[in-house]
Length: 124
Image (cartoon, rainbow, N blue to C red; front, top):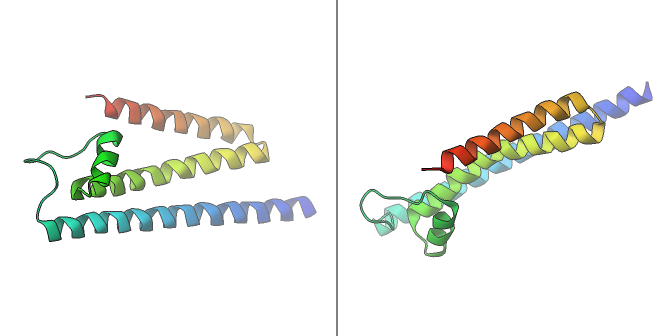
């Protein structure tokens, strides 16, 4: 009976970590996007000519260094997208620690699909 109690406590801890991770990720993303929007409002320019905006991580980080509003907004969106991916990584580590190999396999497949979709999405 002690094993079940320990497992329940461990699962509660993991759920708390995942919940905090998701909450912090969303709040951080919202704050970054808000900074970009405020900068856009105060400067009156996106930092890019016409209707262009940064689409690669290199362009986003370069634009952040130059305080370009669209780059900051895009970084906030990137953080928002990254948040559930980090949740999958945390789940994978948790299932590995628990030696629950069925869920390790399922979670690894989900992570691989996410990585492939990001790679496919970056090709133009």
